[in-house]
Length: 137
Image (cartoon, rainbow, N blue to C red; front, top):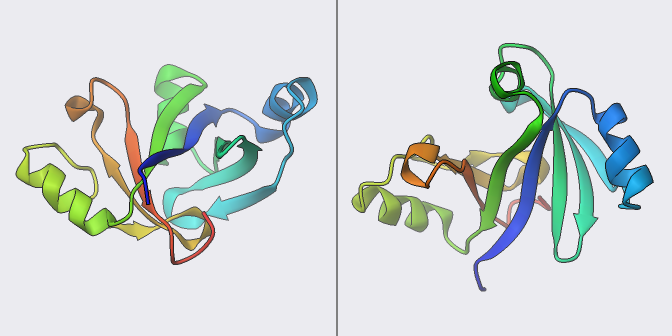
């Protein structure tokens, strides 16, 4: 499997309002909306080519996306890269001195394994790593 961009996460104040542009304006199909309780976020998934746009709406102010929107406003939140072996990639990055938010993968949207890499080590971009196999993320 080759490494690829799996999705772009866009923080929004309201999925319903954001769909006016992404679905109605651009014509992207709304595939599904899922709540990821662990992260306090509603996720609207809109396929685009081999990737997708994920609209991220906080379920509360004191959640990662809630704090992001309060501090920075709506906008690009993260870039998700699909890898074959997420645990191996995390170990490799840690050995290289990369700052990780998650040292072990956890379950994310669609039941996929996910882990985040801190923007301090990536040139300012929050990177999510994901591995398929436990669900259809």
